[in-house]
Image (cartoon, rainbow, N blue to C red):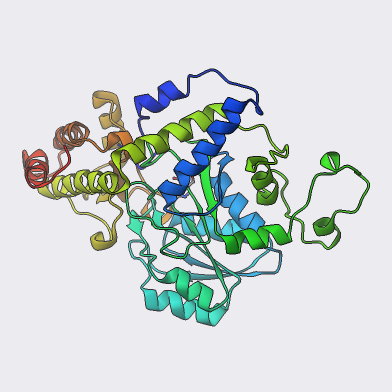
Length: 401
Ligand SMILES: Cc1ncc(COP(=O)(O)O)c(C=O)c1O
């Protein structure tokens, strides 16, 4: 019940135990094509360039940024938690001139703050996180794509923690590049990063295309992007090459991680069978139940709760309570893992997730009951039965079971 990774849906585990095939076997290529179509629906996009990057969510981030940022580009990174700092660092490593705007952890940016920053910096790329798991905040994105495009910038969004559990509408919001992971609301393991690029983003990638010498008819012929210094500074994460591999041409690049492909495909199938809106409603309901439950116990919740992701709650560790001892007792006595946080919030909050397979009523109620028992032993003042009682009231009003 932490902020991810979470308990993997048994259907995903089963899918991942299927036999492998050769990478150009018709079954394999059909599976890749089907997975692309599924993730177009998950991201709510018509982008042809929708693929998986092999690696954890960070691999998707690196692929998007290293492929979209040409050294010297101005990149605006609005930071409201740990993963904003990660985008900043990766953009710096890509050779960008990075401009950071920050709000305190526990807040999000207003649309006016973001627009002002775009006008001031005039970036080629705006890179930000939708749901920053470190603070639990969910940055509203409606309208931001239009602002970026009006000022000549592309918009990249890391929706690893929010996708599937909170609304995300790539095309409607004008997002040019989005990356995610499976280990949060999608109910899978880490190790595959779904990614989608708009036609605008593909234009940038196309302008930097290069083909590996060993794949060219004449390996000694000059490669355009390499010759003019615009070649992407990573081979593995060069999205031009990754897109070629996923295209009809199937131009060889890496060997697709077949087991992760099976897992990613099953995650998307599960989500789409449930329905995107139903899945968001389920995450909202169980997130609300945890929120009401911890408050019902008498605990305080961190941050601007109106902008919290549905799938994770940050609970302030009460004075005099050893937060790590509580986490450890929950794990050892009840088999339940909850998260701590990072940086300024390390040791100050616990993060309780209700994501993917764990966004379930029984998981929520057992977690609240166990938390109450552990806190009582730790001598924390609390309202007996207040956690499960408040959660049950939410369920009495809610819809999904
Ligand atoms: C918002 C966000 N971005 C990126 C990451 C990094 O993901 P990974 O550990 O899969 O590389 C995480 C992980 O928690 C995350 O929550």
